[in-house]
Image (cartoon, rainbow, N blue to C red; front, side):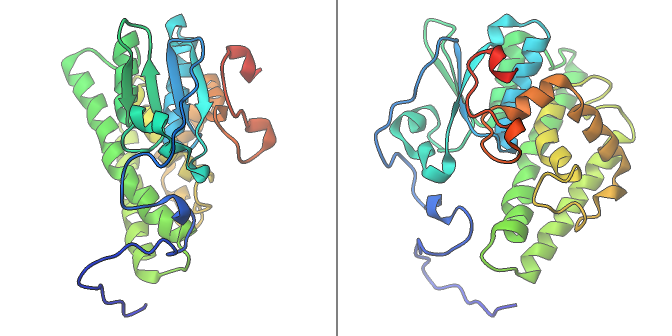
Length: 277
């Protein structure tokens, strides 16, 4: 453990190291002019197959599988390592410069939606699917959706960063966030001991939001940390993760905007259903 003393006034050191350091900065806004492409479908998605990006493509593929033809979409690759998220067109859709971002051109005035949880809720409401309408069931589903939005930064920016991406291994932050990651897995495990899916007996956007992060973790796809976190202890999470992993729409959605991992699982852009064949 180093005896670091924070300065009285923090200043940005662009050479602070670590994965993704070249794209992190303390200011917002565009760094360059670049218009976003627009395809033929009303729904235009700009994303990358990180856990947050997977949420939206999985939902869109699930909606199509349910027969909602209006959920056809173009998925354009945003290479965050190259700084595509700081192009003027992307910033106009998401001023926070994070993937995913969605434009809905189906109405007279285009609608922008950013933040993955907001996109899931918007699409579920638009198509009347995968979000319960009964007040108590809807509240349960949205509570778990927003649980994910608040919890995953501790798993990703906390545990994932210090365990997998930081320029050096540091005992205190890894222990602190490993403890929190295991606490969150225990929250899910206790919930899934009571019900088949996160929000109850029906598959919903709560599962779609949570699975890419926590399902990916227990299935050994996230941070190579399954052994370190003893994920085998969470038997109910594992049961749920494997069941969702087997869904055909989930398999398709995981591939969209993926440019890493097994070549057979990659699909940089998606513009037609046939692209996934």
